[in-house]
Structure formats: C-alpha cells, structure tokens
Image (cartoon, rainbow, N blue to C red; front, side, top):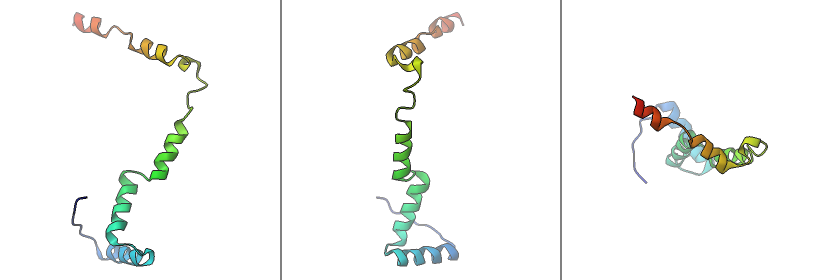
Length: 85
C-alpha cells in the first residue's frame, strides 16, 4: 500500500468524519473504498457484468464452430496488400 496526501474542503472533511464515526471506520478507508468503487468498479458490479455475458452468443449459428470462425477471420490478404505498396 502507498501513502498519499489529499487536500479536502471543509464540507467534504466534515462529511467524511461524520460517516467514519457512524460506520466505525476511518476516513482513509472511506476514501480508499470510494476510489475503488469509482475507478475499479465494485466487486459485485464486476461479477454481475461477467455473469451477464455468459452464454451471450450461444444461439448464434455463426459461432457454433468457434475455431472455424476464428480461422476464417484470420484468413485475409493483408500481407499481399502490404507487398503491393
């Protein structure tokens, strides 16, 4: 963990201290928690996002053969086009 220093206006300072007292935690923990939620997303939110994509393409016939689909995507004439330049 790294240490940092923040400048907070009076209203934010007061609100954080009041919340820390109510929840029995520290201002530092509140700031870490808020930063995690804002910039990393909550664990539940990330888990929900992952669960929502499971089976997303199961009914798409073009993805039935995933290996074939990827191989088809990789077949292109990129090298030939680059050689012509």
